Amino acid sequence: MKKCLLIAFAAIQLVSCSKDDAIKEPIKDEILKGNVTSIGNQPSNKPVSNKNTPTVIDVFSRVTDIAIDQNGDLYVADGNDKRIKKIRTSNGSNLVTNFAGSGSSGHADGTTTTAGFTFPKSLVFSKDYKTLYVSTWYYVRAINMETNEVTTIAGGGNSVDGIGTQASFTSNPFSLIINNAGTALYLTENIIQIGSAHIKRVRRIDLATKEVKSIGFNNLTSTFNPGYMVVDSKDKYLYMANRTMVLKIELSTGKATTIAGNDSSGFVDGVGTAARFQAIGGLALSPNETYLYIANGSGEGVRCIRALNLDTKEVTTVTGYDENNNNIGLFADGDSKTARFNDVYGMEYDKTTNTLYAADPFNKAVRVIK
Image (cartoon, rainbow, N blue to C red; front, top):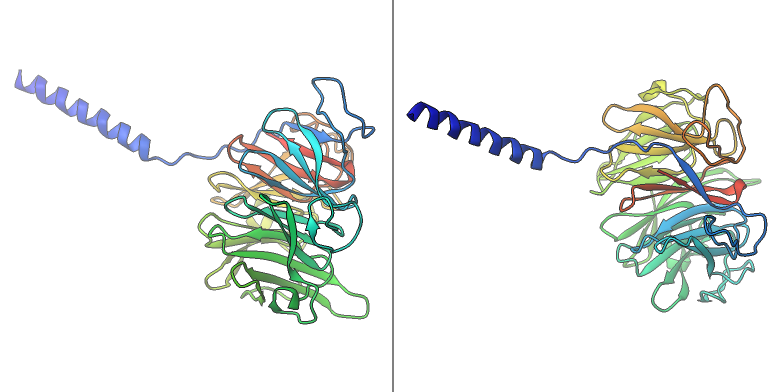
């Protein structure tokens, strides 16, 4: 009898430990299936009556970046239309409306309906969602989401580094991101000026003081041109891409390590530096930061979405490419084999709905990947 009781007690303890272990085990990301639908790419700017089709009152001209608010609604930088647009995804309507910008080029501050934007390029929300930051031609702007006021926080000055509007940017700063502490913005500049040097740098804007500083990293080759960026949830690592490779940069030391791709352009899935990329566009981290999603083919080559497993460094193609039917540069919704992109720039991952949104500028659409 005592032996039976001991066995039973041991079994209970074993089950209890197993449950505890299961609870403590971290949730593992699963790679997206690669099914693609679209918002935009409508034949006209008239509302669409078909209930199964997104209702659109303002189609896009050239989508470059996407930001998601606390409700799950999308804000879209439409460069050629000189506006920020809003997509109401939270109620399922996908209604597109003008949110900010008069439609005229310029840098005038004011309300969201009167302020001017010259080619808005990149968007990011503050951590409390009270401010939407926008990078435009030579400037970084801030939109107060409660008052609808647009102000210039940096750029337009005569000094490279400096405070606020005393600092200057070269042409169009892009890849605007915010650290998870909510204290600083980072942006990249990679511009070839006529009659001047090739400007390659990363800038940091202290949101409390508005001080703009150029920052440097270790181990970067002279050929590396900074492109799109994303920061991890602990503000420990910055992931940055140029056209053909992805770097992992330790923010505390500035040490940079190549984790995928190399100086050679191409299209090859593989592990680490054996993988090949063609003109990397946007970057986005999966919810638990297992995968770094990479837009491949910004302007050339195969245009698709790739995934880099940050644990194994393996690069795989998620959607937009089929080696047996590689229709480069077209528009098609569908599964991972049949979907097609004309280009991919900024991307944003909605962790609540497990959805990746991607800007497809030349198809004039926001692509929805699940």
